[in-house]
Amino acid sequence: MKSQFQKKTTKNTESVCSKPSCFFCTMNEPDPSLRKARIIKAFQDLPLRNDQEHVLALSSLWNIAMMQPNDPEFPSLGIFECMAKLIHKGINDKKWLLSDQNIYIPYYAAHTIGSYTMNKVRFAEKAVESGVVFPLIELMRGKITWVEQRVAVRALAHIASHEKIFEEAIGVNEVEIVELAMKIAMTCPKEVFDKFVGLEPSKRLKYHCDLVTRGLGGLEIEDRKAEEWASQLQCWSLNLLNRFACKEKSLNLICKREFLIDLCGMWGGLANPTSPAVIRLLRSLCQTKIGRQSVANLQEVIKALCNLSRSSDDWQLMAIDCLLLLLKDPETRHKAMETSVVFLVDLVELRSIGGRPKVGDTITQALLQDYHKIKYGDLKFQRKKVERALKETWDLKVDRKRREKLMSEQEIGERKSMVRQLKQEGNLNFWSGNIEKAVMEYTEALHMCPLKMRKDRLVLHSNRAQCYLLLRNPEAVISDTTIALCLSSAVSPHGKSLWRRSQAYDMKGLAKESLIDCVTFVHGRMKSGQTERAEIPSYAARMINKQMNKTWLFAPAKSRSFNNHEELLESHGLSRPTVVDETIAEKRWRKL
Image (cartoon, rainbow, N blue to C red; front, top):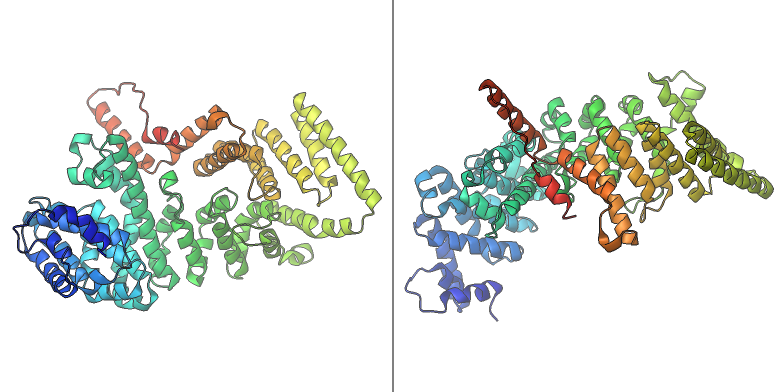
């Protein structure tokens, strides 16, 4: 039976080939022993030859590596030595690189290395022995362009993921690799914007356009794929840094103040929503003593973790884990509590999340660990709000639970009737425009409502959140809606609370959190059939459009470019004409 590669390339050699050293004839050799010898010879000759077959051969090898990354044939026959030499040649011989279509070769070579080293440790060992690390580092240094940087970082991250060869592969170049990965993570959105997205279509490098579109063409596809690739470059750089953090290597470099603060703002948006790169790196840092101390000293980082912990993001649990690690360390606990308590108290009602049960109980235990020192001792916090929040948590999770266990059925029934009456009065006051009075009624109903009445408490918190929204109190809205969402089903979160929290996050300028809540809200409506013909509600569409513009990966770079252009116009006494410009972000939300 023919291999998949042979089937793909048979069409290239159906007619008689006049080249004795044709690469595709070599791949289609039917005799196994001859095929092996000819493939070895082909890998040895490819870096020495100067003909147009290079790009076709490399493109085919890249395809087979992507489709069959665990196939041992090519790794065992010298493909890694071949790829390393081709990258080295592309970096050092500019005349060769710019002739014919050779400019594509370093990209395909680095991508092929990354694909084969992704899963199998023995392939990664062979790659390191074959000398691929140094050429990949050269690409990381930016010796060609950001396109080659992307696949080089990917390949090094895969190689570094194999614990058995981590030291051998990375050890000698540890500091430089870490510094390069940090630099790339911080600067790649600007680099890709300046060198591709921000350019006029006619000024973009043709081979970049061909690579990102895979020959499909079209400006919109180019822009969308460039955004995705820039996000991948950033995420893979962070994944590479995570390999070092997991081994507690170069922590003093990674834990620099500037980098950690920038790290919190790195989000690829909806172009790459499945990567936990940022939060995974932060969690790895929080699992080390140096990392915890560095994070605890930066309120900006703790606040970012707190905002993520109260969001609909898929990585919410990782943020909670980071905060719990800080709270469990006696050296960082007090600093972390000053900021995190007022966020985490809203999560004590959480049941299971991400397959982990009783998350809310774990948070409660961490928060109340030293509560006796606050209540009876001399433990004090700078912010009285922190002490009040802990007291309310103690009352809710300890005192109130204890009292309700002792209540008779009759008393519980009376409380239920009172709650329904207070809720009705709150609704009447709300619709009458007496919002402050409605807040008071809902608050009293929450104090009376038995803890087991989760659905009733959910509605009361969500209703009070709507009142706070009208009163322009976004923090209170976020608190109430978060509690409501904790009380709702994780599989089907409460839609009204999601939408209200999205609006509150918008009021606070937290565009990412607002966007994720709004998208989750829309998906929930579509799933439940509340929207006709799967149309996004206009109010939600406007919110998504607004927040995607703000969270667009290239928004900061575009803003800088716009400001520079404005300054240039002003220096010449000119003004910018008014133009209605539909950005990439505005186009993309319609594809959700």
